[in-house]
Length: 178
Image 1 (cartoon, rainbow, N blue to C red):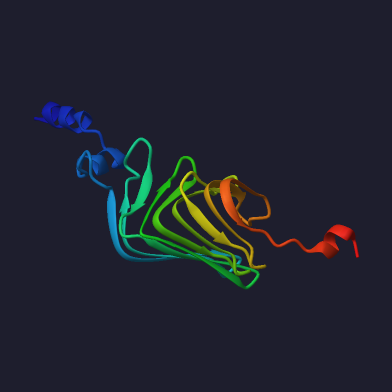
Image 2 (cartoon, rainbow, N blue to C red):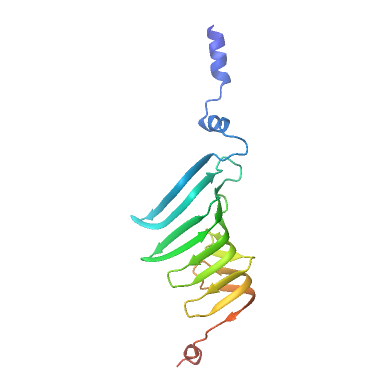
């Protein structure tokens, strides 16, 4: 009887991760959430607030990600200035730090820049945003672009647009130095 008990004890793998995997469907999320209100703080101040009706967490996959099938609303604060981005669908890939926002993407920055696009990628690690889809952007000075695709730093100080039309307002005093 003792031998059978010892064999049974050592035959079982007691790691928590393996037990978790047994209770998860092969193609299903590890966790699901509803009415998400996630706040990220830095030095006691809220710097990001993510709101989403639904979250599917696929951290159990070899290439982990979180999916927001009913969209997101994210508020960012930097020195008291608020920027907001919304979309009807979003997915965040853990390994790369890339966020893919899709359908009715609207970004409004604290300095009144308004970007509308069908899809927008945000590379968190490199602080870069880009799209290969049509977009419309209005800058705070009234200039705007309607284009097919762009690459930009996340603060829009470096902006590269391809195949666009629009109006650019140039301050002649800055050019002439007067």
